[in-house]
Length: 268
Length: 205
Image (cartoon, rainbow over all chains, first blue to last red; front, top):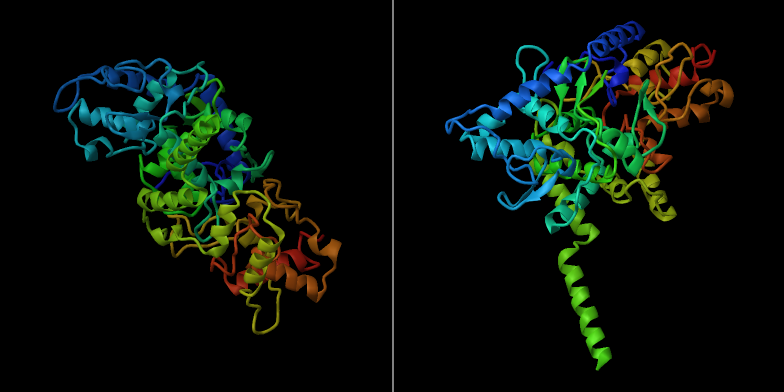
């Protein structure tokens, strides 16, 4: 199996099932509680991310401290609450992850392939630098109200395409995001599902990602969240930083406007 | 004169609107193209899974809103015609296997072994046997399905057909077309039908 699948069935949208029964649910809850007692392990990712941000790295031996996340070079505070956004230098709408890759390539001189080599950690010895950077940058928006603007024509178009993708049903199961996330108060097995088409539902969900997943021992970015949703939708694999991933992120982030950002969070 | 200015302003606005606001149809086209370039094949999950059939396309187009009556009727008719009932005329199998299939969530994901089990994952969305407490609520409770409706042949046919292709009875249903899309075999659908329709099944006891 190429992905860590150790959670309870209830944790997963359309999840791989009940081979895990009640006893493993109890195990997971115990691990969850233990993790909470020590605070949120996401802090370890935040600290590593801050180090990576400030370290002189790559062929050009510079830090990321001049990286422009949308509100000026080096400004991290509150930056995530305004993403995704259009960037003139790349002429693209970018989410945090694609912007980080952009900075790692343009400032530090890594190749794009190198920058994207490990978007997600494997749950043990192979951690992802991008997930650490995501933890650091997002932690600097904690307590900030989501404020994603739709001003540039490319932002408006990406938002509307993101909405189309949300409702796009396909694959052997006819699933789309809409299948699980367009109704109030529904659940998969025992896992509650957020309704992402309303402001309140989108706020609640979007402001709590990224998150430390106790069941995986990893800090998970929003790119990971989308990748794993599509896996369970029985779609092919979502490409890291692809246009569709950014469009969908923009749709959800914008719907969450006004919500107070409160992540990295901790989830089972 | 003032009217002419107003007309010119309105025209400019209309042209501007045309340029900056792509139609719904155009956006759907752009989304489809974007999806193709944003996914990669992984194991059994190949890129052709992004291609929509007519049912998927129409259901996506209406974006979770109620379909006009004639569109819904057309879709239901189209899907009803796809249902293949077992040649031997027997619609029910073994409810014990049905329970296993209802519990099994693996199958068709790129992370699943292509030669491994493929289940219906019914409990993800439905309550069935009362012993299983970890059931989802996207679909209605099916507890006591047969007991409440009777075990007759017509109801059996409905259950088999509904699992085979739910779009035949409720256009744009959230439920997968297990038979039509080749997720479950004829025998698996028979076993699931038994889970709902056998008087001995825990669903009905």
